[in-house]
Image 1: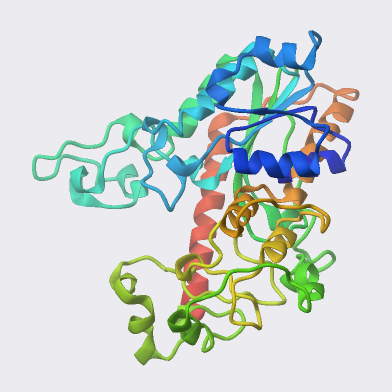
Image 2: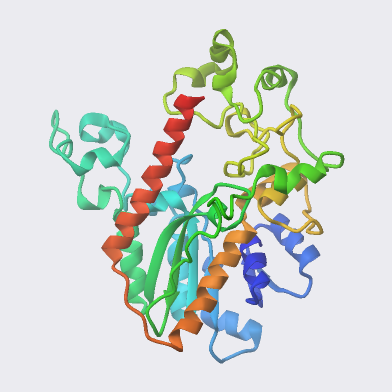
Length: 398
């Protein structure tokens, strides 16, 4: 409900919601008892069912969705649209076509930008390289009898297909990779956002409002300093893991450990490749948090409190996501962490809402221009890769 809360903060209130997980539905009902909540599989819904549920046959102003994104996640197997979870994007598109709202919002992981339409395992690629970017050039040729990647197996092919299919529904679209910290969230969280307009050139995401000398980023200190005396429920590290966290300074990670302890702390992950910046990570008071995950208590996706050697609490995680302090999370603690980690930062939701509202105002002045899809893909990929480079630079500096 982070996205919903953000939209509501600028005047765009949800009237109907869908969620398949009964545990998450319990939280929604506790906080929004008057919201019409459809609990169940989105694939079993139709435009007629939604209209009947709302007892409404007029124009729907906007539909907003963030289909499950594990198939595009950097932490997953990158099965792309071969994965049924990836195909839930098309269930969302089906409902858009049946409801025909004036606007739609599609939110997803940033790695959607470089995902392939069809996934070929690394061991079956010529040259066996893990990065699809390498196949944009000379590497994509037959090597040792292994055929080159097809167009559908290339980086970015999934997004090209999704963009084409969105336009085939009769919508004008824009999309971008955005960082929630740019819009006032105390957290760096890259997301893919597509905005669709049925009748006119589409809205565009607004320019960053934070991160300059005039308006700096919102920090962890800004968000959770006041919770030190009463952080609320939180999980705990096992004694062997806590032993290493005790040696990590504010803003550090496993690379801050004494060299002779690093391999012991990392175990089998020590020689696994990649930056592994999330391992034994302790937050910095005076910077935005890294991406809040649903597993802040794991050593590999750690969000350790800046001072105490413990995972940040559910309430602290929620504050970094922008949830108000009176928002209640129900269920077991691990379920609460997952609910928080799955959410869109409230501040990013507000920025999306402002984009829609600004678009309406702009239409009263002129019709605007259609953005170029290829250019948007180029810009989105550049943003994603720049973020990856920044992480590598940060790793070396550590």
